[in-house]
Length: 353
Image 1 (cartoon, rainbow, N blue to C red):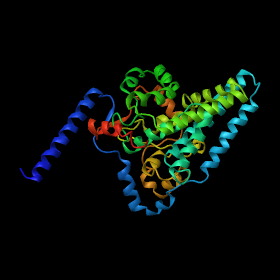
Image 2 (image 1 turned 90 degrees about the horizontal axis):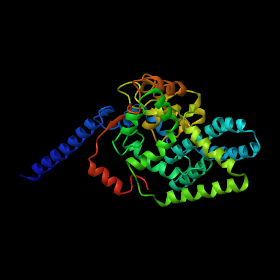
Image 3 (image 1 turned 135 degrees about the vertical axis):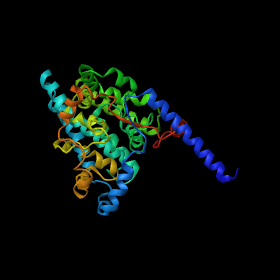
Image 4 (image 1 turned 45 degrees about the vertical axis):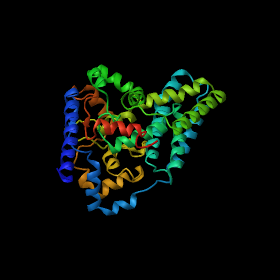
């Protein structure tokens, strides 16, 4: 057999291995939605740019991000001063409403900065992300960047995209009361699921991140006390749990309209979240900052206005909880990589170290 024949045979063997692994995974987890093509946004981006090349002028950083992050970190510290001696019910109310909302906003600043959209150069964005991470009280920025880049490039890829719930989550959290519990425990699943599904060796940036958080937390306890540190940490857990802003966790990729795997939200909470609700726009153009994602929709409305989208994250949470047809299984998965390719990616430390 000539070289051409060998190449064809090798390609057929490769395809057969991939198809075999895909079939096995689908059979083992049949309750998820399964797609048999690549993630859709790369193709959509090229198509949209072909029709609307003017969108290229919006690509790049948003210089105001660093000022927003600095302001809200300072505001959280000022809140600690104002709430000293406050009764427990005032403290608890502010912890959920104020600290929860601001710290969730900082998680979305980390999201923005993971795409290097806050400053020129990778390193300044990493340090800005750690600054945004400080009032959360729990180290997250460095690891988030590593996993989030893979979520974009390999959206829905089994094992690689840890944004997708596990089989156990789908099996256990199926009833309304259990889905309420699942929403409350979102921070736990977002932190532990990657370690269980796609663990990575920590890099120097994780250690830098951890050191900065420990130093910041120690300073908070030294200056104000343990109660004030709890205000920040519990606020983070509240804000990522059963909270209106946390509705974006469900709204972004949970399949509530079959045949679509990414959904946008066009409501007022985008003001607090760096326009993360414009999620189809974001996945289509991850190099356009949140500030300009509404411009993407304005310039290319034919790609966004006609597809299902949301106007209320609270309604999304409610529908998720009460609708028996929606559960952690309501995610689109795909198998476009062989196990050996996933292992090789993991051995390299992932896309980003």
